[in-house]
Length: 522
Image (cartoon, rainbow, N blue to C red; front, side, top):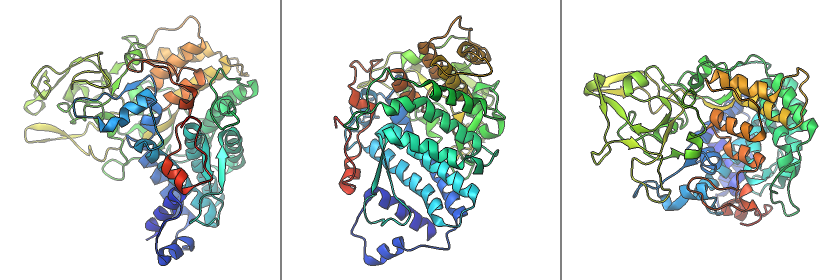
């Protein structure tokens, strides 16, 4: 019963008034003392899993960037142009994916707020819930420029009264995190909102603060270049310096395997998935790009841009690395898949060249067409890797728990923090330890078996962030900050206007919340 009530409350945040009968209205507006703050907090953490869905943050932050192409392949992946709209910045206020992202972010932020409104939470539970609400509202602000919020006790059958605009929201979020910081756990597993997770989010807020302050009188986002304050950049540096207990990982892809939170020294904050148990949609991260005839059977969808692929030296482990249990048993590495693909036959005893569904060679190519590609065109990406535990059935290898993998979805990791520090130094921040942006970038590059750079520019930082963080969900945010998001790249032949710096607020949200004002241009 309590899960139903929590779900209904979250729905009211998004949809406003409905014609539910009086009995349901009474149940939603009454307090349920049987639901403790602890239970509500557990539910708030669990609800983060929906953001792993292929229609949530991934299209918003990666499909819309210069890292990913979502080609239509005959009748596959057309979906009335929804995927193409992301790549071409052709969104409308009725786009189904954007509507889902708005609902998911706002409803999950409201789940966290229920802990704050419960009244019996400990200081630590209140601090963790504050972090979760601010974390989710950060994405809403970043994507849509406005964050609707309710006060405790507000009538859930009426629209939210507060619409927090991004020009003020960034300061509100910083204040909220700093106010509860000392009550957050000083350490813990990566699925818990610790002080380190708060430091990472604070660094993100300070790093992008100039972007959010660049807002017109009509609420629209202004195109850069942005005026980054030295004090903000120093705050980024200080928060990164204070991160405790993390090191760059020797094995790059260990941050994305089934036991990533247990084995990687880089992971700061995740959405937890349980092997064989409660899990989100993390398996889409390999299914969405791999071919139908690879194992586990892919959906033959999304591909990397040539621009992304060409950023890497061949020696760079981020481009391609063998993963035990995957490469030796199923014939492909983690990273980028291009050229003739091979795989096991006869129960894995023999490897041979794979074929496509028309029995032609399964050869992935750089060439791809957004509107009309066959099933072999495009460079594939496998970053999160399937669980290498397998069983032998019907004389073929089968992945165990492919529908319930244990890979935790990574929101924050240390390599990202280090590159944020390098950027902040380059933008005028002060590091009392005397480290330089070049020191940081080359330390990372040497760890990844890439050649050291003789000097580092802003463009170099942006490229290194793409090499390190590709398909992890930060590219849109990065490109806007560096001023490249409105440009052109493979299959995006026309520059976008400044309206694309914000997504449209869904028409459904505005129809139920007249206090919202649509972003300019939509």
